[in-house]
Image (cartoon, rainbow, N blue to C red; front, top):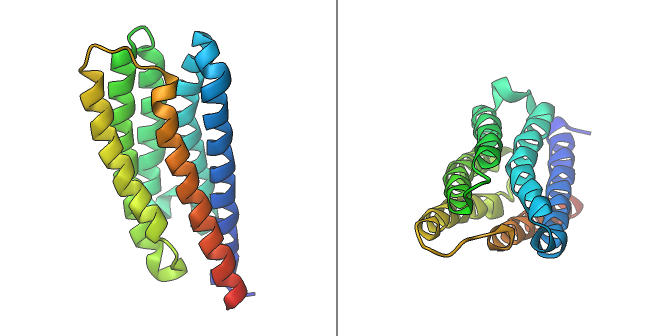
Amino acid sequence: MPAATDGSTALRNYYYLRAGVSAAWVTAAFTVGTASPTAGAALLVAYPAWDAFANWVDARPSGGLARNPTQLVNVAVSGIAALGVAATLGNMNTVLAVFGAWAILAGLLQLGTGVRRWKAYGAQWAMILSGAQSALAGGLFIKRSLGTDIPGVADVAPYAAVGAFYFLVSALLLTFRRKAA
């Protein structure tokens, strides 16, 4: 089996994993996260922490973080964001602002990763679009954080749901592209 096919299979499986974890996170956010402030806080910290870990896992089959600079930076940005969210849990407007800044940076880095992968794997338009929409959503989070309403985990859940959708679309594109080949 050629290396590109092996990489495509790993990437497809990774996208399915990301879709599943994001969908589970959304479900948890709308159920236990809204019922329990402690659970909601844990979920808000866990989301960027998971993104950091997931980017590290994703980079491994294609040469590690040293060969994937957008993912290297994304691991750092997401890890810092998780710490920032944890440090600001006393003020949910600040949490949303930190989440917004992270969504902008992580989105742009995801967009860059999608562009870089386009030639090798194709089927990256959904990841590129997802990255762009993440950056846009981040700006909206920051704008909303400046308001007087107190946000919560349910305000972030739709963002994660859209991410789950894009990961699923990308996984399906790689699945059917591979079968057609």
